[in-house]
Amino acid sequence: MGWWQVSADTLARSRFVISPLAETFAALKLLHSGVAAHPGERAWLDAHRPGYLRLLAADPVTALLVRSGLGRSWIADFLTPTPRDGETFEEGVARVRAAAPDAARAHLRLSLEGPLPDPLHRDDLPERAAALLEYVWDRAVLPYWDRRRRVLEADVVARTAQVGRGGWAGVLDALRPGTRWLGNNRFQVNLHEYPPREIHGAELVFVPVTPRTGWVSWEEPERYAVVYACSGVLADGGGRAAPASLDALLGAARARVLVLLGSPMSTSHLVAVTGQGLGSVGRHLRVLLDAGLVERRRAGRSVLYSRTAAGEVLVKAAGPDAARP
Image 1 (cartoon, rainbow, N blue to C red):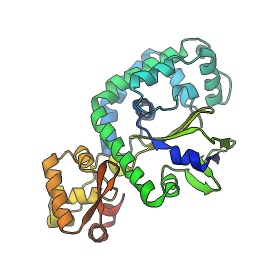
Image 2 (tube, rainbow, N blue to C red):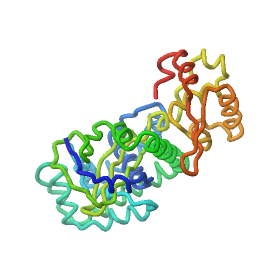
Image 3 (spheres, rainbow, N blue to C red):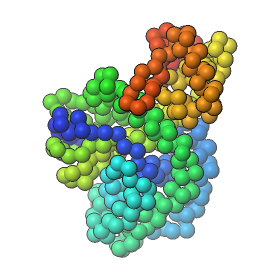
């Protein structure tokens, strides 16, 4: 397993960061695999994967670059510069474009775990990678960015509240498959057998993306990042229907809000995920609050709503799928 030695000061200063570039690279991985995690993702792939595949078919060098860069168990580092707080997509992709050609080739050898294919012995690999990321951003991410950003913000708010309630250990254990707090200042970041890293005094950021993927990156010794998939109830757009029995009791729209509140969410995030209007969501929350089925608490500048014990009982009674996070 791969783990990092993290001092208490480093962990205390760590934070969550939203990165348009990380979201775009996650979308690139999804376009390349073509494997959807939920119906909304399938619809997105149906809309955008044919164009992506045509682009690669017309450019065999870039197609080989992508296959090599995604690697067998390691992503070529120059493709995933460590996210920075407040960085725009344009600023992030400029760092990909600025990678040294020698470094890009070395990173590809590492991801391939072997020699570099002859067509990749060239100096324009960073430019090709940046151009492909720009294509994915412009065609397949930017048109949806407002909603994706709100979903990512919802995940950040919920996990920040979880830190306040139970500390970092619980958050790290549930971040993504393979992450857990080992104790003695050790944070397991994945299941790969890589040497441990000492990151005392470094900047540590946690970066959500909406596709079901993740990776780690770093700029030694100053900055380290763990990219993880945001919680499924957010990433799938809240598309899972509430059980008919709960619909009959509360009404379909209100039941859907109650089902979603297995994870803490704000009013604006509920609006983004459900597609309901702000006034409608507010009325549903008021009724659920008055009924004692949800509660609210402040987390920084946000007000988060979540199910109470009574709400949990009601949702679980409607069926196991309804209570699934």
